[in-house]
Length: 87
Image (cartoon, rainbow, N blue to C red; front, top):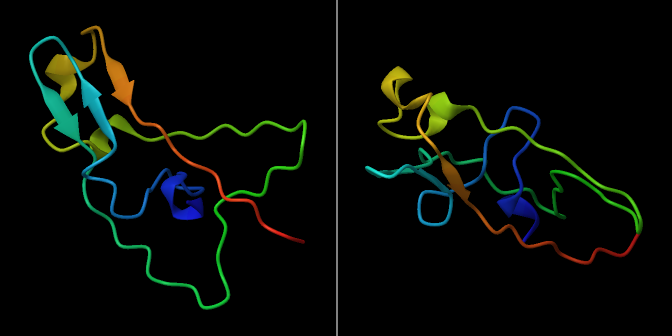
């Protein structure tokens, strides 16, 4: 889904159930954020064949994740899907 990719500010729409950071001690879900609904479709990023895209999600957006976790070994739990979109 196109709404499963972080926008320019690192926000992912309603992602608490499928985006988190895990340390050996705990898993931290991404805080809920409602990006609204775009009539006609909104796309966080259009990627043409052969192109790549990068995104950034700030640690502060993961619920309960604080400075005490910065040095811990971490794993991002996130498998975004892409939609095919005609031009």
